[in-house]
Length: 391
Ligand code: NDP
Image 1: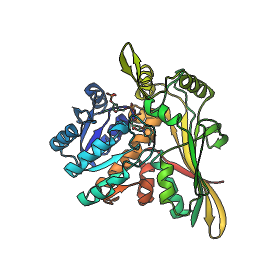
Image 2: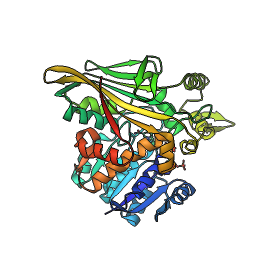
Image 3: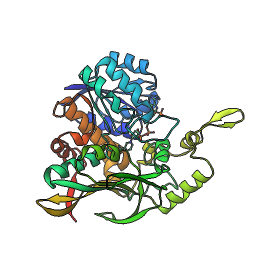
Image 4: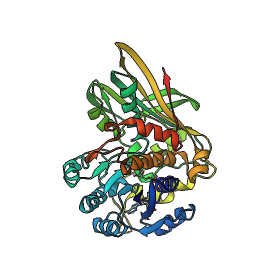
């Protein structure tokens, strides 16, 4: 039995709250805190279990500390934005509370998608006797676990990891992002980066194409890009030589993104409008649909998986480990769309394993450093069943 504090009441925060509420034997008390109290209240009102709500500016470390001291949680699940990671981690250190997030810290003024800022918390977290689980959504998160599971059960050595992410769904809008628009746009406009024969390579974003035949959702074009889990997988999967990340984008998405980029709407530096500083990508976020608002009526499915190639008993082997998630089922289970759902469910499973001490390591840790088996079991139990295909 544990008390959990969830920070962030967006698309992912809604799913985490629903799923924690569905496990009362694990999470006996739940508090949901976010910048806009009404969003916490809206989620609370969808759930027939008491949920505490609180207004919180998580950029302010002292406010987080005050809330933690009042709520006294065993664990914080941070599903606000990456900008808040460090203030929340600082509050965890101050109060001795475990921490979990789903995205790396980003400094607002630079696009990095790197763990550079969070890895130095290893020592202070260890000294404080607390655990910080970094990147426990789907990608990063489940994709890291798929690699660890592959290594444990299917390979003696993994040489190549291709992570493939396809949302073959239709939300009926002309243009919308499935998770926070500002973070999504920062991510997809970043230069592509991949790890090849042990060396990092770079190229332009959204240009190198691979048409991949996904189970159940069919063949779709995917594009090489950078994603943060590549950084820790290159460190933590022994013997890996090549790691690439591929994401499916529709032609409309790519064309619209190109226009937005060319006209300067994806800029993250301030421009002056009538004497006031405005950050274009933040303004753009305000006019785009919120991820949570896409849930109702979203049709189709996502397929995300890892194509792993390596050696088993002296022979080459290639497998694809993947999950299929239906937008409609995500809505029925947690009032959500599949992208928020595939992020929130793994966060809840990671939190469950941490509070039950099935997963325990003091310091900061990535999912692939822990035993994948109980997590893989949790995916089957809590709504994200997975499959393995020999290729
Ligand atoms: P949303 O924009 O839907 O939600 C973000 C929430 O955080 C909003 O409720 C927002 O409040 C709140 N928030 C923002 N700033 C603060 C602050 N200073 N203090 C308190 N709350 C704040 O985003 P998503 O739910 O789609 O994404 C949440 C996180 O999940 C992101 O970090 C994203 O990168 C990550 N993610 C990870 C994935 C993975 O697979 N690993 C996939 C998808 C997302 P307000 O409404 O007031 O703005």
